[in-house]
Amino acid sequence: MLPRCAAPVCHVLLLVLCLSAAEDFDWTKNDRSSSFYYGTFPTGFSWGAGSSAYQTEGAWDKDGKGLSIWDVFSHKKGRVLRNDTGDSSGEGYYKVKDDVSLMNELKLNHYRFSISWPRIIPTGIKSDHINEKGIKYYNELIDHLLENKITPIVTLYHWDLPQVLQEKYGGWQNVSIVNHFNDFASLCFEKFGNRVKYWITFNNPWSVAVEGYETGEHAPGLKMRGTGAYRTAHNIIKAHAKVWHTYDTQWRGRQKGLVGISLSGEWGEPVDINNQKDIEAAERYVQFYLGWFATPIFHGDYPQVMKDYIGRKSTQQGLGSSRLPSFSSQEKSYIKGTCDFLGIGHFTTRYITQKNYPASRGGASFFTDRDLAELVDPRWPDPGSEWLYSVPWGFRRLLNFVKAQYGNPMLYVTENGVSEKMQCTELCDDWRIKYYRDYINELLKAIKDGVNVRGYTAWSLLDKFEWDEGYSERFGLYYVDFRSKNKPRYPKASVQYYKRIISSNGFPNQREVETWKRRATETCSSSNQLLAADPLTSHMEMVTEIVVPTVCTLCILLSAVFLMFLLRRRN
Image 1: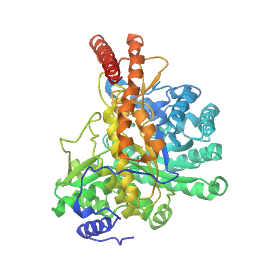
Image 2: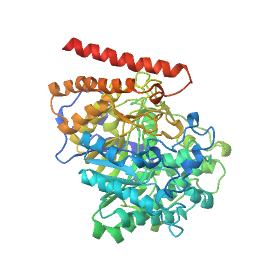
Image 3: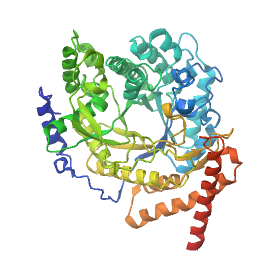
Image 4: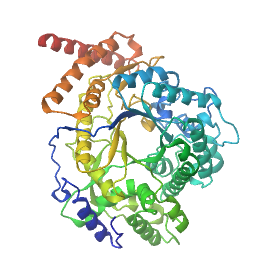
């Protein structure tokens, strides 16, 4: 393990030297080549797909479920695009057997889902009431997965805080929530731990902190710039550590499970690899993103660069102490090492350059604290979400960074995937096929480098509610018809492609892999025909009342006819 350096320049130089030592991967050459590597993953590698409770379950007020902050947030006009809500979403609450059959068809080894805290403890306070109907639902889901030989990987917190805890305590701003979260986790261990062996405490706490309490883009919608995100993260890290210790002391001996956390991290690449300030800014970007949470959990305290930058800016703003909270020596010891495995969520990459922001009390924010600017290459593909560009080589770099920084821990890729944003239904998602092909291949290269990755989770199994973007973006392998009462699922071409990766445990040889996309595209034509045959209003994404349904119908019909024509020509 590298010693911590006092000066940022020393820290970055040591990092580069360490990373360049990774086997078969020379960081100093800045190789961004797209050469494809044919090979297979280690025996026992686990393939899966994921979802989260609020995004997929629906049934927001059924069977005793309490309100979550996302129920309240999405019901306020203007908070979510087109005023969409997750009230019904994909109705996953009622479609357990149907959805598990889709997983079975894919031959998944694991399925990652989250437990809705207010569904089993409506107020978030265990002593108030436990909702047995909610516990029954998750028991049925877990049992059905195991009956189909699919391993459940369960997230305890995927952003749906009980609204009562937000109103009564201020949510994650208040340290008292740590004990309530521990009570919730303990109940989950008690009720489900005899069958669940992989637990994730939090999903992407960066978004909870920054988008929930700094920018207000996500629930609970607070704009506490320069302070809110740091306080939230501080309490989340404490809550994670407490739950890990609770499991370790009370449940691990009997249940033999593992407890980790899922952190999202985008890679930051220096704009100018010969410019020391850009190199430092790029590392700062990753440390303020992934390192913010990973470094305390693995090393006991925040990254030194965060403490230096936020502390200096706080002083310049005339504050008596840093806006970044500090851990006591006892807390550092308690937090350090509380991770049996690390989940990595990764979607995209940014180019990073140095940019100085003057320190002013009124202008303090998480983003200006970093003193950097994010850039993208206009040649990078961007099929859907405005923030998501396809940059596969960044994935391998991020994984090697984790290996070097944190002692090569056991990793699971807990989120990786790409969206689409279009008015017409399109099941032949060739851009998603290419994204999965290239990113999973970079993962294979990282494993070849010696990174200890044990499993991969495609994000996501189904189209779902996409937070402040509502239903305007789709990440699913399966298309969900949200306008139909029954919310039917249709396989996109990427289903067949991902299924072939799973069955082959990677990319066995060039000849075989090159046939996969063609076969997957042929398969999706039949699904397009099914959609085209549905009643007009059941499969449209309405942007206007008249024009879009007609255009979408034509798109679907023309797509199906064109694919049938191609198939006949081949025959």
